[in-house]
Image (tube, rainbow, N blue to C red; front, side, top):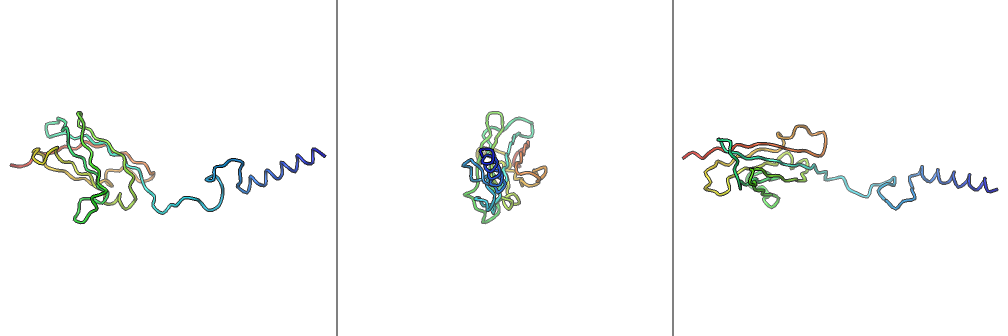
Length: 150
């Protein structure tokens, strides 16, 4: 009799686990309608930039502005993030960007002060990404700032 009960318990346990129910409390492991939304998938982009001048010396305190909407007229500037280069001329930041933002996102490099003597340089992010087959991208670039023409 005990063997029949253990056999039924094993059979029912197997059927229940095949239906997708488990003994743990993790709701995300269950089958059926997912609890999350996938409407706004975002890619993670890490920008690692080194800023040098035409002589190859690092530019300290340079502004590195990452703008998801770009720098065109009417762009939403509240989303912009400003980094500053450190003692070694490097700046690093990680951003969550949607596919639409990836198409329009730009990085602007400016001198530390408006009268720093360097011409601002703007680059689009999408051409800097080697490929779009995963959701984590690292952009590691060296930017050379030119002196302003006098």
